[in-house]
Image (tube, rainbow, N blue to C red):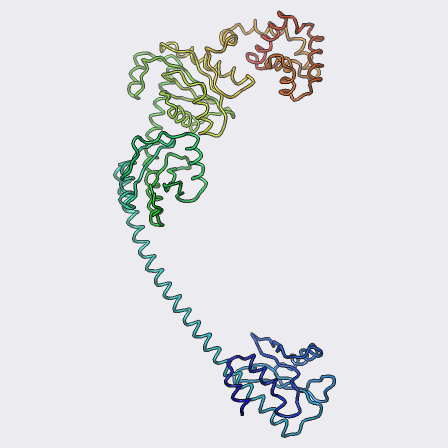
Length: 541
């Protein structure tokens, strides 16, 4: 009876089985050989099981498949596996051995002990199920409460989003531009809102603490910031600002930002900022369409000027598009590395020119863009701005100053000439000015082409023939030698050959051509001939 009380007072099924195995000797001359608990459809051995005969006993118990049956254990004359059965399920097994066959009374006591153990296991199992059910019910109630709170939050979030949508739709319909967007965004968030253009110049500010004067942008840092924000999804915090890009079709048109010095911005703030950027992108895209119409008018005017337009008509049309043609002008020709010029590249050139302070009219040809600028361009500003905008290198040719509209077609040829010289020079990307060409100015358009061919043939003909017959590069070697100022090491490095190979080639050039590179007259004529061969004749035989 004391054992029964202990069994029923124990809530743990493993402890119940341990007590039964420890007290099985009270029912007779028995020994508890092994015990098993049923867990998730499998019989799990008790830690008290003997290790010597464990595999054989395990195998036999599993063969019984829930029934009672004999078990053979070496050293014991009698052994039996007794199922610990509840009302609904098998709870486990108790394997008992004896040195002699038990009497009927002893076996009856053993069966009683097994039944009490099974009943205690049923109670423990029921209690465990109750605890698990209570925990599951508690979990479900907490989950329901969390879902209810989430539903309330979602409803509030949707209400806020609808309000933002409605406000930004009104802003877009009003056509108020950047100022209307920053005003609405400031009203939604309570934070100062601002719009900058692609180059970092302020376009609109609503709210307190506006810097006076507004800081002049650093082009390098501005580009780094734009690339950093473009790589992320959603608004990005940079110092005290929460920033998002305005880019309707992937092209960055500007920056929309909130000044958040106290780091107060939350998800609602980011949502409002993103939708304000979308509204502003639509507005700027519309303005871009208008700009494209204006650009087309510019192109038509520039095309006519390059062909030789009537002055009265040209002046009237330039006033209509807001450009002063009465000033002195320069013709600028821009060609990028892949030598194609589509509308996107033309727009990029126009933005870059505006960004460096060039007031100009623009058009494009199949392989280059033409600007008619009202001031002499800076030697590197336009080139560097284009490199930042496009990520590629460009060649730029600039004409001499043009004081009359009638001179524009001729200045256009000068700009093309400067471009060609740049493209065929050692540094084929950058800016070249026609009035700095020196010798190349007399080798430009209008020169006697046949006479130039005769001159080249006279001085380089034998080398050209030798290169053609032997697939050699004597003329190119000579040209590069002159480009490097006669420096052996620099010439060899630029040709990717050894210094001794260069010496051999120069000696072969002397032998083949019969000209002496040490002779001043021969050297001058050969250098001019290589320039004409490369620049005018395009480096062909």
